[in-house]
Image 1 (tube, rainbow, N blue to C red):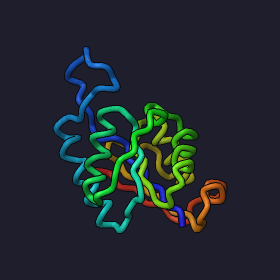
Image 2 (cartoon, rainbow, N blue to C red):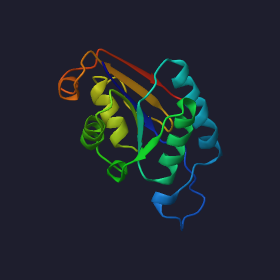
Image 3 (cartoon, helix red, strand yellow):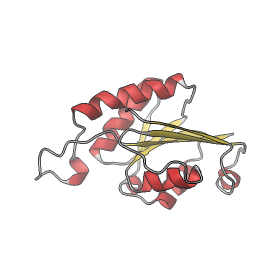
Image 4 (cartoon, rainbow, N blue to C red):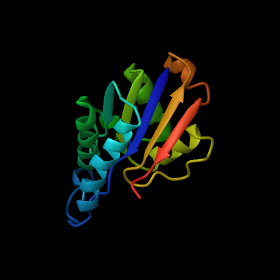
Length: 156
C-alpha cells in the first residue's frame, strides 16, 4: 500500500515587505494551526516514514510541527519550493517511501490534490491536509491508478 499526505504550509506572515518570500515565517495563526492539524492527522492513524518539505521557512516550520507528532525526520528538498503538481508527485515517488508527507506550496498542492481526488478537492487552504491511498506497493503502479481512498481536512 502506498500512502501520500499533502500539507500546504500553514499561514505565513506578510508583515515585513522587505523579507524575501523564501524567508517568510509563520504568523500567529499558522503557529497555532500546524500542531493542531498534525495532531489530527496523527490521530487518524496516518504515520509517514518520512516528511519531505520545501526549503522555505514557512514550509519547514510547518513540517517540523508534523514531524514532532510522530518523531519522524524532515528531509528538505529545494525542488518543492513553488513546485508544480507533476514535480510534487515525482518527488514523492522518487523518495521510495511507502508512506510519506509532502509539505509545500500552492498552486501546486491544490492542483495535485484536485487531480488525485478527481476534482473533488478544489483548493488547499493554508495548513490543509489531504491523504491518498493506493492498493499498490510500487509508486509507478500507484501513480498510474486513481487512489482507492482519500481524505481532506482543513483547520477551519
